[in-house]
Image (tube, rainbow, N blue to C red; front, side, top):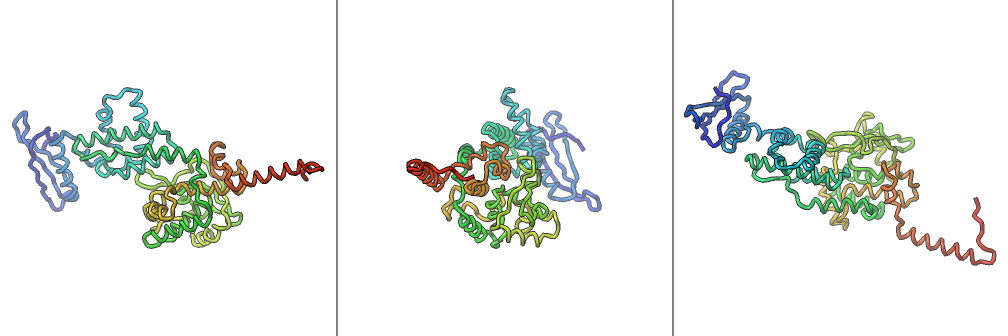
Length: 400
């Protein structure tokens, strides 16, 4: 048996021999005529399952057709990218290669690297890019990360592993602009009142498979606490004090290698959030039903973690919000809703900053833009003040 790889362009004959009683009974073998020596050469490998043996034969045929590492077709993205990096990035200067490398290591690999190259889809890439935008990555950072992924997947196309490049996205620049607009005026993305929030929650439950009420609980809790969906997913029984009705936000659910994982909050520190009276009956029922302090309060219908993508898909979010006239509304806008309501309720800026977990006071101040009612009230207050100044007795001194 030879350990060589088939030369490019040779014709292979293949077979699978079953040898009962062995730990790996399926022996796959390929044979070819070496074009340089004219000698008949072979390569074989044994497997536990017939499907594995057939996959190996397919990979060997692929190697002969395109001169590709026969294991590349079954590699995960992170491993494949490392193996073809120099080839995929050829022609780039250092000033371009460095940010591409950073984007690959810091964003592509953590979010997509665990997926096999053949399983990477346009939808998976799209969700990854949106998660980078939501995490506050700059436009250039997102662009460089996408560019690195596009080059690696283009190499997969050249290697014959993929027939098209799933990383070539369109429209992400528009989504990024929307994210920037959101930061400029997040108030514009808020729901108008509590009735609108509960109506949305009920509509999402109605549209979900099985009419799972937990989706409505997630939505109302997120809107009433100004929390991220990932933070709602991370709530444990021990995080909520029912005596003070304070929720200590300690973790969030996010995408990681192998699926959804829990990690620290976005600001890397715990923060305290009040649970308003409208939410307390629902939260109390969940606390009573939770068996242990580390039990999750908000889960999917099968008890799993929740992410914004899971909520969107399970409830047909886009369809529901369009029907209700909130076509602009995304899951993260529930957080904008809660913060806007708190600002309008007169919560002091420094307190609102702590509740939101904002690192910058400037970010919090974007929620303090006066609404129409407060503008009218300001005008009425000024008129009252000027009228008092025109009175014979002059303005009265404020009572301390």
